[in-house]
Structure formats: C-alpha cells, structure tokens
Length: 232
Image 1 (cartoon, rainbow, N blue to C red):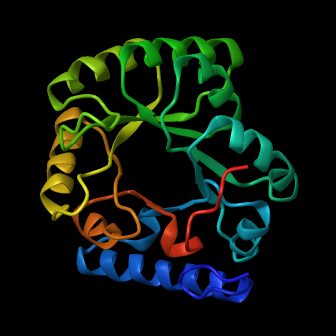
Image 2 (cartoon, helix red, strand yellow):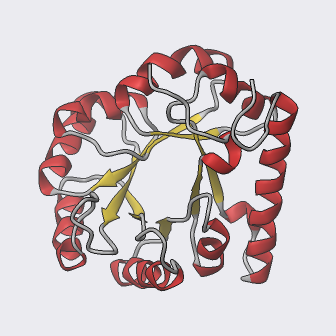
Image 3 (tube, one colour):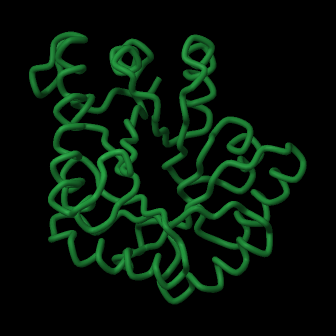
C-alpha cells in the first residue's frame, strides 16, 4: 500500500522517523538545547496498528490520539506487547468522557474549560490515576478551535491547581497558513508567566520553529504516517 508521499512499506516509515528525530536534534542544537529534552509525539490518530508497529519496532514510545474511543479500540493490544508506550490525548475532550480519558491516557493536552477541569479532577480522585495535563490556549483567538482565551488562562490555571490537576504546561495550535513563530513566542511567554515548563506546540509543518522557541513536545502526524487514514 502506497501513501500520498510514496511510502510503501515499514522501512520507509522507519526512515521517516529517523529523519524527524534528526531534524529535531538539529533544531535543538541551533537553539542551544538538548535533543532529549524534546518529546516526539507520533500522532497515530486514524492510523491502524499495522502502520504504528514499524515505529514501535524502532523504539518510538510516545503516541498521540484524538479520540478516546479510537484509542480504546486500538491500543490495549499494542500496549500488551509494548507496555512502556505513553499515550497522549491531543483531541478535544467532552467532560462526560473524562473518566475514560484518565483511565486510558498518560497525558491530556486539551484542558480548556472549568467544566472539564472539574470532571478530570473527579475522575482522578476516583481512579487514583493522575495523567499530566496541559492547558490548551486558543493562541490565535480562532472561534472554530478549542482552547481557552488568553485572558482566561490565569483563571483556568487557578481552577486546575485548585482541583489538584497535575498541570505540566500549555498547548496550542497556531493559525494555519501564517508564520507560527510569533504565536510560539507568545506561548513561551505565557508559560513562563504561569510558572510552567511544558510547551506542547509544533506539528509536521512547523516543529523545527517550535523547537527553537522552546517546545518540549512536538506532535508529528503526516510527516511520519503520510496521508491520514480513514476512520472505521
């Protein structure tokens, strides 16, 4: 099977992974950072286990999924063979799915409103699991995107800390088709102002820029997997 970029087998996908790692390392070097301080999240949403296995075989252990149910269907069998996999939820989360997300994921990047903070806090208290949390900021003030407004971030952070969520950092998705660097720089400033060290920002088209500005987590999908798969 060939994807839109001509990838035909597991060797090609493994090569992509090596290339992405090298580019992260180069960007880190330019910024005077250590490559090991940047986590590569392989965004495996909509892709089947057969597409994920080549990356697992190459030692990739951090993966991102958009939907709780898709991850619940796909990952238990993979994690049985690769128990050190770390799963990140990077898609919007409904409050009524908070308990499922806490049970399944090791990190939740999309905490963006007080009602979700409340639901996650309750789920963590009841389950004893405490996945790291990132507060999602609507950095471009785009109505079609999730994330809290910049002005609402201090209050959301206060609520998350009051609920005893393990807040690790901030997450954003900058506007498409514009230079992302100013948005990444603003995110880095917001994180400093909040006393947070984690920055989940940068995707296939802009992750090197994000790394030079301080990203600690980059979310790479199409550059690793090619065209997005179809949902079942």
